[in-house]
Image (tube, rainbow, N blue to C red; front, top):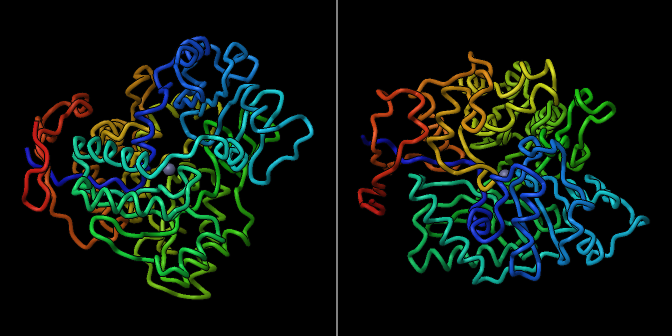
Length: 457
Ligand SMILES: [Zn+2]
């Protein structure tokens, strides 16, 4: 069966490639298993990612005391990438002790070794920097993975994945492209702090197009995650009295970023998960548009996990799209009750969004597996793949097969700044006829780009 090739409107190309080379904790089921996995690695600096405390036997975050037997600097990133735990060796390397002042927009705890949000900058600063050759290798590997999954276009956030100048990333991508090894067309979601964004604009990079690579919207991270209890909510977390999460920016800081982009012909795509952040983002877009009206192609909220129907209507009024990840339901289904209680009925309203505003699917890979059929399966079934014992999550928000494919193709064209899309894939099943349960196992057997076969098994 032939389908249009998929477009993923928010992921991290470099992160996908890098993930192949670090310790993967996604399948770990206990803190002991994490320790066993990292302790035998013959590396002088240990970076691992992908644990989820909801899946661990202990049902809690690992803390530095758990990691005492590891005598090298060690960083364990949570699956979301917004929270990490480090061991004492790493704290020593970072020169952090009880008296080190906190970082605004984030937090760290010397006693547990847990770092969140902007405080992760301290951790990233110490990870050995990749060279341009490393970046190119990550890209080449990511390209292969995406094509074999039937994805030929992406919007990708890569400038802040590592502590390297954004120009090095641009050079690496263009060199891979010139080598003829970039089949996936990349629209970069420009993730830069305001001083670097100014530099980027002054050097004429805004909206610049290369061959298979072009500069897209500004990408802003406005809060954290529900799993890490760092997404900003109006009311307390149901299981953490007094905690309302973290807004990464003040209203003025967020305005300054979006306004600077807008004045220079750039849209903004903003990571917002909690309802308080969604509200801040809508108000910011509204203010910027009133002051300097400009026809946007792709202003959007990425994730919008806790966006109420009222907020979705406000997004429509302000021409704000949604870039959403049905696959997040796969593990969030376990925590949504305890984290947000009754507010779960206002969460993951992806079908309502699809019916109201421009809504495209993405995976945020390497946060989640990049496989579109798993994402589509969850959009249609509203069930978890890893935890099938949980009941269907808000059935009225389930997609039809047709609409799910649309959200992965047509709806995403706008987010990769194209007018049309003429890539195709051949799959091994008739997606419209097979039982829903089998959709997640569909395989791509051929990829056609502009009429040419570029992948075949
Ligand atoms: Zn992301």
